[in-house]
Picture 1 (cartoon, rainbow, N blue to C red):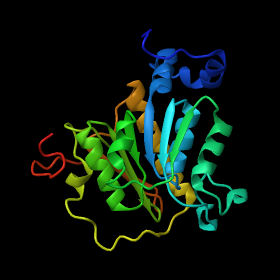
Picture 2: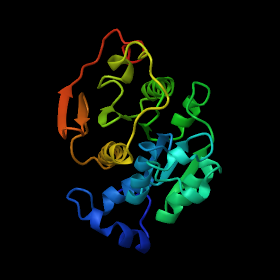
Picture 3: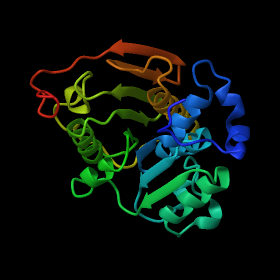
Picture 4: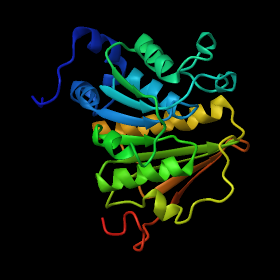
Length: 251
């Protein structure tokens, strides 16, 4: 067993016992999860659910960036926000909820949304990144920083009853700019969403993180998962790098 990985306490072994039964995980895999750090952009319907399941799985350190206070319209999907916290900062509700679930996980909250001003420093703090931001300027900033710092990026998004997911490995897979060379026009901050839809794709994104950290399974690389929950139609399509990509073309 690698000595560089942190040991598990008896309480942690009891908590994670069932998931350690997963083939090729065991105590070694659980120690890898405890040793890992993950940045999640926003704690909304997607990001909050990703963070919730990563905390449940025993990821050692979560860094979560999300500005503002809890609003009534958050509560149909944002599992880390509660009715009694309306009008209070999201960055106080997030660690409260995650520590109630799992006190063994370190949670660091930043009361800012991802921007070009803060993204490099935030990505430097972690092993990998989950992009769950609603705005493309945030998503492109994280994509650039992750590619430049050679950090894996799990890219997940949803709209209405549609969702998509891919895993970006710098130098090996397309980055977000390969898929969207130009900023998507007319994208709005507010859009239709059911919590069950955002939670579905978020759960799958959390599995991608677990696979990347533990080394089990096959990550969703060089492929994009498209889900239409109106018809329950799921498709996985190949995606390719663009040699002239401004972000990853030279990586």
